Length: 86
Image (cartoon, rainbow, N blue to C red; front, side, top):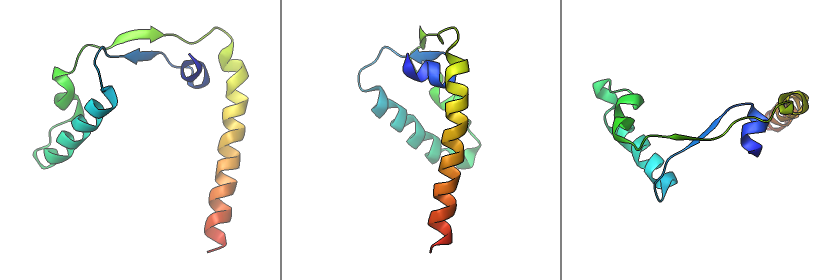
């Protein structure tokens, strides 16, 4: 629910064990067939059907939007400071 609220996006899951490994395998296959112009959507066509797990909490976007903006600003400062000191 937290990810859903922070990014104001629904979260979907698939009913499979080791889903992170499965996602990595799909990415690897996509890399192998990249020269043949096979889209990632085509690679995952055989994946289990995702199901909606949670939707954003009403009002959460108003709480998290300014925090995400501030996070992005701080992230840029860190990136700038780390590259300018090298």
